[in-house]
Amino acid sequence: MRWGFDQEQLDFRDAVRVLLSKKCEPSTLREASVGPLQRPVWSALADLGALSVLVPEHQGGLGLDERSLVLLLEEAGYFGLPHPIVETAVVAMPLIGDRLPSESMVTTDLGGPLVPRMADSDFVLLRRHGGFELVPTEDCVVTPVVTVDPAVERLESQAPVASSRPIPAWPSIGEHGERPLSC
Image 1: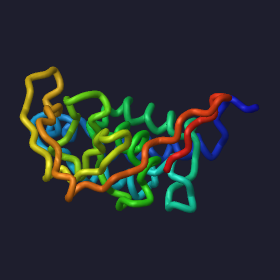
Image 2: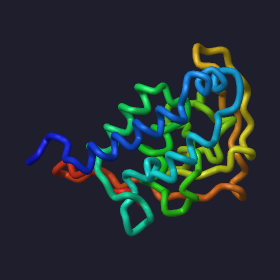
Image 3: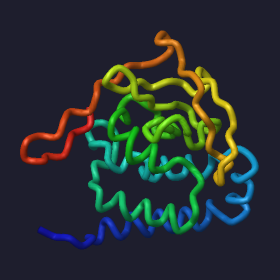
Image 4: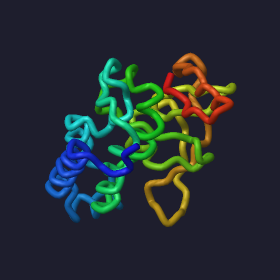
C-alpha cells in the first residue's frame, strides 16, 4: 500500500495552489469578512474539478480519493479560502454531486443550528427524518449571531417539505469498518 502522494495528486495540488494564489488574494479575504463571497474564486475551483474530487467519474466528478482531497484542503487553508469548501467538497458533493450544478455552494447544519456561509450558499443540506434534505437557501429563515466568524448564522427554521429534496441517508458502516459509499 502506498501512503505518499503520486505525481498526479501533486500536480492537482499545484494547480489549486496556482489558482488560489491568483484568485484568493488578501483583498478577497478582507471583502469576504464584511460582505458576500466572491463567486469567481468558487467558479474557478469548480472548473478545475476541486469541488467534485470525491464524486465518482461516472457521476461527473473527478473520482479521486481522500489523499487528493487533503491536498486541496491544505491549499484552501493556506490561502484562507473563506468559502464553504469542507461543507461542499467533503460532505455535500460526494452525497449528491450528481444532482447539483458543479458550481453549487452548499452548507450544512451537521454541526448544529450555527450554519457557516449560509447567506452566500445556494443550498443547505439538512438532517431530517433519518436522512438528509437539500433545501434552497432562500427557503430558510436565518438570524445573524455574534461569533468570532461573522459568516456564521443561526438557522431558525427550515423550508416547508414541498421545496426540499429528500436524499437517502448514508449507508451504515459495515461490520468490518468499510467506508460508506455516497448515495
